[in-house]
Length: 200
Image (cartoon, rainbow, N blue to C red; front, side):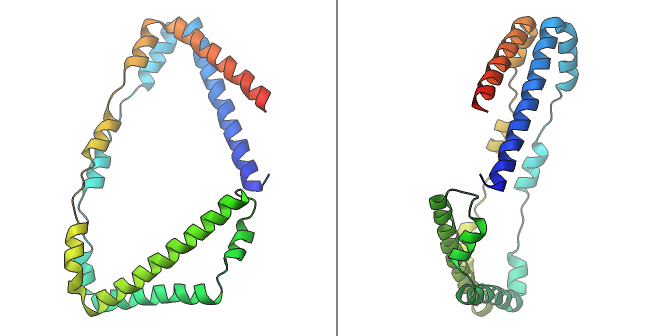
């Protein structure tokens, strides 16, 4: 097993063990002292709005005026950047070297497919970037139509409303039947611990 896989596996097992321990303590507390456990839950159960995230996502950001104003600098810079990529690609780049560098992190067929796909995306993206650089340098007005099509407004309100939705049903069950919920948590953690021990 590779080093990255070992670190990831150990980290997941540790996080799982900590989560099981916390769940077991919560279950014991709900069974033994439900009133105290629910008081603590009430203090910890603060609601946080993510409206600030919606405002940040929906704030308009425009780069077009800067690009049009400095197109004789932006265009050549983009051409030089993509030219450097293609020079490296044709002189020093090797998929085999990349495979050797990351061998062991993923199964071999998956790693080969990933490296091939990443190479295709990089080549196509830089070719498009070089073309865009020439357009920005020579005829930036040609970008007006695709720019208008691309600058369609997409509101994040639906996504943030879903994240802000309050789900109180599980908490309601805990307040109505604290000892039963505690016992169910203990049974679930014991079952998961047994399965984990058998698999480990």
